Each structure stands twice: as structure tokens, then as C-alpha cells.
Length: 179
Image (tube, rainbow, N blue to C red; front, side, top):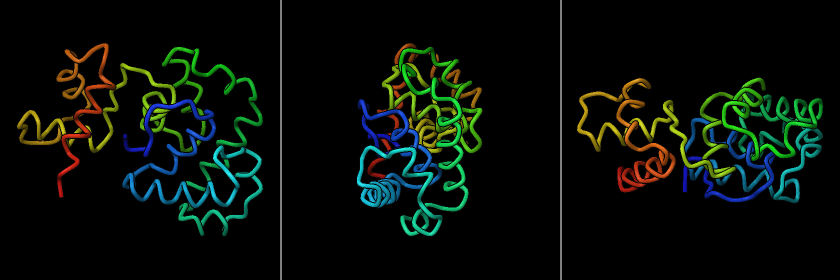
């Protein structure tokens, strides 16, 4: 299981992106709890775009979704409403095109895209250089004095290609017993 509380699966892309947004900068356990409350509220999963658009802010807040994440979820739904061609067949596109299409959405950054690629559509060669857990795990496993910067992390992970996603799973697992 990864930081989005996801295991690679075939959930619909919108629901997976909702999970990734909810998971930004919080623990896996907290993200799972918030997502479960949202899913129960909308009768999902899946999480329907129109459900996200129609929920009042106080209902989303009651699920534990912060103001910035509420705005991102609404931007996500609005973007896909305005661009209905993006989600169908998204898993068939190359990573760079997916990144370009998703980071165009306010509130969706590289980390969210990386989690979507890794856990949403099971891409095997993704290295989330901004992920705190990956950086902390690599620091620990390689006995580094400081958390690796993105360029250093990419250099360390070069031998992991074309299976950097799988290597990241092991790095995350190495931290599971940490306090």
C-alpha cells in the first residue's frame, strides 16, 4: 500500500485522483479515513464528478477535507467537465502526456500525478522525487547525512530502472516500523 492508501487497481480515474488529492501531505491512515467518509457521503465508491460539484463546502469539510483540497477537488471536476476527452483512455497515454494534462489542473502537482501513475494505473517506472517517505527511506537505507535532493535521488535510483515504482514500494515498506 502506498501513500494514497492505494494498491494498484482499476478504480475509475476520477476516483483515483480524488484519493490522491485527499492524500496530499497527510498520513495514509488519515487519508483513508477522510476518503471513506466522502465515499459514504456520496454513496460510493466510485466518487462521481457531479457529486463533488454538488456537495456544499460544509459537507466536504465535515469529511475532513481542507479548504485547499476542496478547491482542488472542485477544479478537478470542473476541468474534466470542460475537457471530457481527458479521462477516457488516460491509462493508454504515455507518462509525459498524462503529467501535462493533469498538472494543468490547479492543485494537482507532480506528487499527485506520480501517485496516480503508480497506484492508479500501475506504471512500473515512476520515481516520486518530492515524496517525503521516499526521501526519508532513501536517507535511512543509504545512510545519508541529509534527505536527498531530487537530483541526488534520481542518481541513486538510476539502477532501479525500469522498476523504480517497485523499488519505491520497498523503500516505503522499510519505514513501516518507524515511530
